[in-house]
Length: 227
Image (tube, rainbow, N blue to C red; front, side):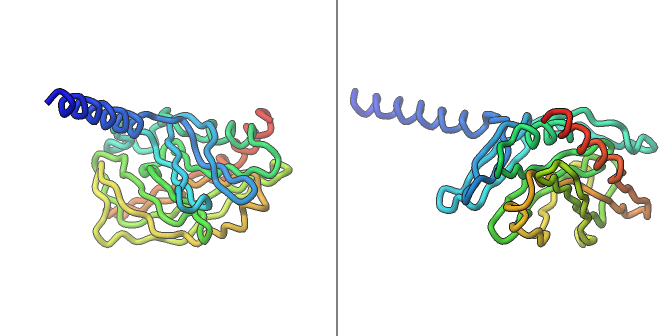
């Protein structure tokens, strides 16, 4: 009986340790080097590399309280939560030669945020999930965009196609994002790739669009200064 009790206690402690490890925020995002993904520092994220295929990596926003972004006419309120463009810029600036940081960020004022993203050998945004940050807006359509930071630190912006949401995304709810067709060949050409929500359409006919030009300029400035 004593041995059984000891084994039970040992198993309980082990499971508790596993649970704690799973819920602990690593403050890391995905980084590609040579032929495999690894993890690098960026506040507010967890990073996990597929144990069977090091060419696949997932970033997930660490669990945090749900803070609604939009209430009535207060659309576009600044969001100071973790995982913003400054954190992405720092991670890219601190990366070494021939490394590529792949991340996602919550741009200020966006009514949707990317919560998780899987980067794979066939698509740099093979799968993702996003969350509706509003309190009273139902989402029917959105677009995902991304910035690429070249080896010379110049920044280019790309916006994807409209993604219709037949079931709609209600306030506080999450939605799966299908593959976005972003070529993994970028991993050998750029220093960083950062995904964001580019535009949103609501069921009341109103829309929201990111200021991509301003974000691009800010990212380029931050990466250069933190080099």
